Length: 318
Ligand SMILES: NC(=O)c1ccc[n+]([C@@H]2O[C@H](COP(=O)([O-])OP(=O)(O)OC[C@H]3O[C@@H](n4cnc5c(N)ncnc54)[C@H](O)[C@@H]3O)[C@@H](O)[C@H]2O)c1
Image 1 (cartoon, rainbow, N blue to C red):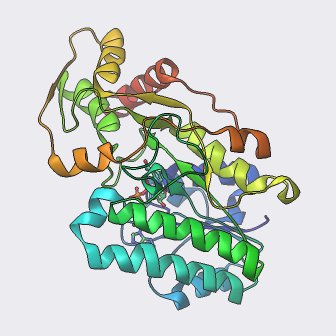
Image 2 (spheres, rainbow, N blue to C red; image 1 turned 180 degrees about the vertical axis):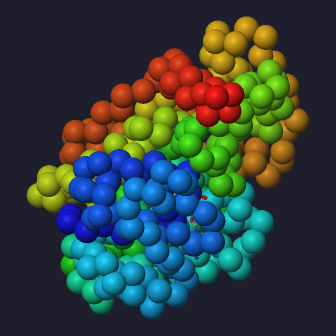
């Protein structure tokens, strides 16, 4: 990996992955590919950027050739709630866009492509506690279906086409630089905004809704480590479970209250997001990633809340 293109560069993960990659590979060697949404100042000011629309294969190929790219992180996507709100666009971005990236990677001879999957790749019939890496998936959300498609296509391109595709099934990601873009786990970020701005938050998921969650430094670490792992040790490719913490809304509220005693959380359940959350795992068994590329998370709930609270308070209150 020498020159890296990152699609979806303006998003929640791109805004954090790009600075980390620039630190590691050199600022000029990591190209941020945006699509409509604006980049953060940090990303725009620290290295090259361009426009890529993943729904057009030419657009992906042009960026790869223009910047002499050899590896690509494909983060451009519509998340769970955004996908249900615009099915045709979700098909174009999450299915056609993914195929375009894989075909463009083959046509231009890329060395490696990383495509994140998600806990959304599991469904209501999946064992919910400590969900194994290999198990019944059968998701019922449009986003989840596109994630299983991405995993299967990634594995197919590795085995049958000879393109090195890798990916992790990320839990809901908590972060403070960019607000989340239309997912089911956004409440865990929104609660901090509510706490700091108003001392309160109305949660759209029911108390007791456990979900696997991850603080963004661990998500970035997983994306970098899976990409850099020695291929000889990998028996899986685009479908590694990675786990770090699991909590439900009242546990998050308690943890925030320990830093901010007056914080109040009440509930107004959104049926769509509750339906999606109920179909996802409570926690993941990530022993395969631990064995094959030595995956270890750094953050649990308390460490995440401390760091999140401190950084978001500084961002919002100065
Ligand atoms: N954030 C999470 O909690 C989470 C959890 C699991 C997996 N993931 C996965 O990580 C990846 C990045 O997620 P995120 O949270 O940064 O999402 P996000 O919604 O914050 O950002 C997605 C980006 O994709 C871009 N995009 C939309 N249409 C595009 C197109 N046609 N071509 C190119 N780019 C386009 C958008 O402009 C946006 O900047 C996605 O594949 C997502 O499924 C995220």
